Each structure stands twice: as structure tokens, then as C-alpha cells.
Length: 397
Image 1: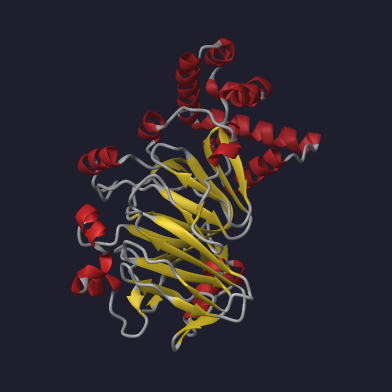
Image 2: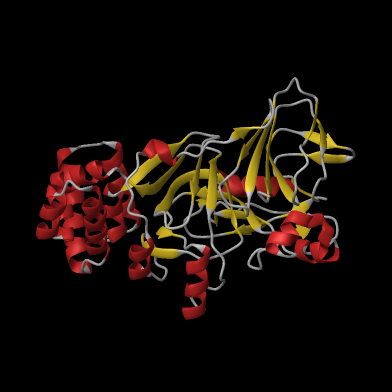
């Protein structure tokens, strides 16, 4: 059953034909005309009310079809999540950084929704998995505390924003628990610093970098962020958070309370079906700084540990299987010499997206951008004479 996804045009997206989102959607929907001036940020595949997929043949909403065919979800999904698809499948094309953000736990999401329903519009958590389609950059989790201390010691502009007395205590401490508590205090002071001080110190730092001609990757990142978000305190977060660079096929998993921000590139993304985002920088949207600072995990980790490894299911399929039941994503890569392949049965309804190559399943053609819905346990036999790359989202049950 072929689907039609929904394109979201957010300001941070890649424009025109530079966007993988636009290219995949246009390949699937011939009447879709790409406008070189429009930022095509996300392609949504699922039942979320803000971008519901429809059946390509009839135009019926996928959610309506599922309501009429509830067994398609699978017994495990119905038992654990009710009669609904528990995940949202996406493609992202990022031209400009997304906000410094984190997502709450399920319990915290329920509390936030109850207290502030106009801001946090549903009671669900929002863990995320991102798999790079092109080189993909992100900020993810706190750096090792020794690294953060090194940046704080070396950058006077950063020290002034945090406060010299607090920085002095942070640099002297050697006990892990003290490190965590003082890291939290330093990050809170940074994120709540007065706008005037932030603007002044950021301007001094950016001008110093230009004068010294230091073109290190981190300095380039700061310059780019300051150009896109002038005077924004989120620019300073690059000295606290790991700068992760993913090659195609590499991934990161973002569980609850992990600070992060996507920076650039194209990726596959899958998440629990929610819109709960707590933001604090690099955004014109509402910032809930106090909530963010209180909820974060102040655990330093090396950038390499942020990468999430899949498990190999067979010669052609790897499964990215996070430690939550809401979703998993299979990567199916068929070399040209494999002319027939049958997908593995899943315990839930699944959505497949073709990102490269051409083939068919029965009379239906599979091309880049093709989106296919499979009921629980249903398999797809693919015939192809070209290399094929397909991603399949399902519940992790």
C-alpha cells in the first residue's frame, strides 16, 4: 500500500533542489513542483495530526485506514500503545541549526502537559533516532568535563558570561559529584546570563577569531551560528556539547534529558509520536530555560560514544534498535547483483522509504521517494536490477 508523505517548510530547511526532502517527495509525487526559494525541511510519514500521511491510491488518511483495519498494527502494538501507530518517520534536510533542546521523560511530559498544555501539547515522550543520509552534524550530550574545563579556562569571553567566581570553583574541583553539580551551575548561569552581556562577549569572541584567522572546525561553527543567530547564547553551547559528525549510515540516539541540536545535513529520523520539545537557544520560538536546565543529564561523555550502533540481521539488513519500544529502523542495502530480496516480518505495522535505486514489488514500481505501508508480519518481495537503499520504520516490540 503506497503512501503520500507531508512536507514541512520550516525556515531552517534546505532550499529547492538542495533538499533531500524536496527531491524524494517530488520523485514520489510527480505533480509536486520544487521551488528554489522554499526551505523544504522535513518529510513526515505516519499518522501525526500535524502532517498525516494519506493512501496514494485513494487519498484516505492512513490513520482512518488503520482505524478500519486495526489488526494491521500488530497485537504487541495494540497491547502496549493502543490502536495507534506509536512512531513518526521522517526525512530531514538541515541548512541552519535547530534549537538547543531536549525532550522530557514520559512522566515529565505528562507533568508538563498538565501544567502548560498550550506549550506542551501532548503527554508523550519524544526519544529520537537520526541516521545520516549525507554528512550530518549535530551537538549531542555534554562533552567530557575535562574538555569543558579546558574551554572555560582558555576562553575569557566564556568565563565572563558564566561568572569568574563560579568558573574558579568549577576549575578547581576534582570530585565527580562536585563536577556534575558545578557543571550544572555553570550551564545554568550561561543560559540565564543577561542578553547584553551575551551579545557583548560573543561579539568580542567572534571578532577575535576573525582577527587571529583561526579556522578550526569549532571556530568555523561558532562563526556560522553567530551569523545565523547573532547574539544568541546558544552559540556558546558548542563549548559544552559534543560536536558530532556522522557519515552516511552512522546514527545518534537521543533519549530523554540529552541536550542536542542538529546543525546541518540530511538524515532519516524516527521518533515517538510527540511534539514535546524543551528549547533554550538558537531559536525564535518559546524558550523554557529553567525547565531545560533542571531536566538535563549533566554527564560528560566523549563524542564517539554518542554514535548509536545497529545490529546486523542479515547480509543486507541492519536494525537500529533503541532501548525503547516506540520505534526501530531497519536499513536495507541491496547491491546490484542481488535481484530479489524479501523483507523480514515485523511485529508491528511498518513504513518503508526508498532513498536510492529502482525496483518493483509485483506490479508496483519502487523508486526514490516511494513510501510503502506494511501491516504487521507482512513481507515485501523486491525485485531489482540496481543498487537499492531502503529504510523501514517499525515499533520495537
